Length: 479
Image 1 (tube, helix red, strand yellow):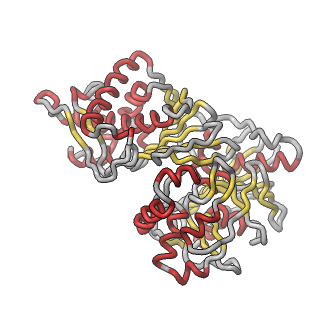
Image 2 (cartoon, one colour):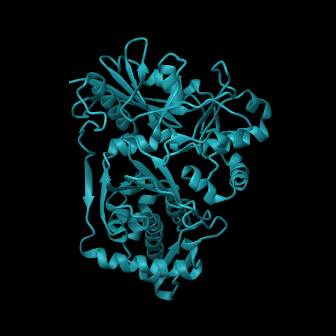
Image 3 (spheres, one colour):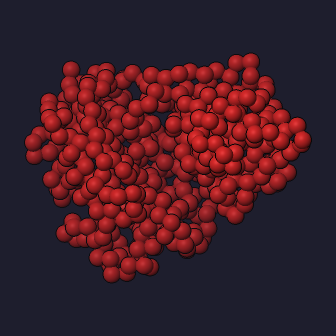
């Protein structure tokens, strides 16, 4: 038996799990908030190190042989030629870069050109778009920028003592907007297009490779983005999809090949195992539930769920298209939500509550269908997020999605995935694991929900939703 650690540096905190290398059992855990207020767009990366040190206090890492790092995706850390940060890291979905995203799309010749080049269309949060903003808004800082890292790259580099060699992994690289999961290579010309000049990029190493060894002898694995780490921690494989319920929503699935999508609805990412992780995002998920709860004067989502359970599937004919912030899937950035099917008998609070849950899930069902339409196999769906625990979600999701739904027990799956990566790299270095096969850790403990007898009813509800969507936005998925 060996011991490894996985750390997850999110926008707000650091979590560390220490795990058994053979089984993946969590032996101990650490936590510390980042020493910053709120969730600013600009963060001094040193805050991540301070949080890491606090989370690892009290001998948490005693006996650990290897560490894996997961961190927030799309956090751009620009360095000068000496390795100092040029400016604070640019994190999150930086709205400052929205104009820069549109500018880049036009500069390369449109959405299709970007999809063919790197498997995704520039969005405000991506590093390539932040580079364009930097070149326009802070030209002096842009001129000083010589090296580009992301959050997990920077943390790995720091743990290793800032060596001359800087590394990243396929998963992290695939979200930059200047690395292609299809070709497995960088597009330096896109860095120059965005930044205005060449910059050094980290070496992309394999999923089971080690980034190096610390001065204390700890092996550090490649690291990856939090989405890829969470998928690895959950243990998903081909045939599995993950539906994440946040304010916005996302659907991702493991696929053996990269997907190029000229519409830009699919972001073609790489996963942490050597496979691919196509992702489809919706702008409206739990925010539609919160808006409905506020409209009905309810204090929380639990109350909204209780009310929705007093209605029946189909909400007495009410259909909500939850496009409250516009929508990305389908691409309708300037539209608004729609409430259809109003009749005297349907104008009751419980039916509106039910329609909100069904509308949110049907919108995510549209995202699932985008992947299914490109040949992605979906037999089982993992449902993540606090809203996944709500009875109204669990009652409707299996029949609306048309598949088995798995609700994992709450855990920091990104940190667990980072630990699993560390165990893999350690085993390869010791000659006990195949570099092509991850350690066979037990999957997440979960509640399993089957469509059962409600499948036909759910699919009828879904068809009614699609009918309203097509009447309101004809051809939206053909654009």
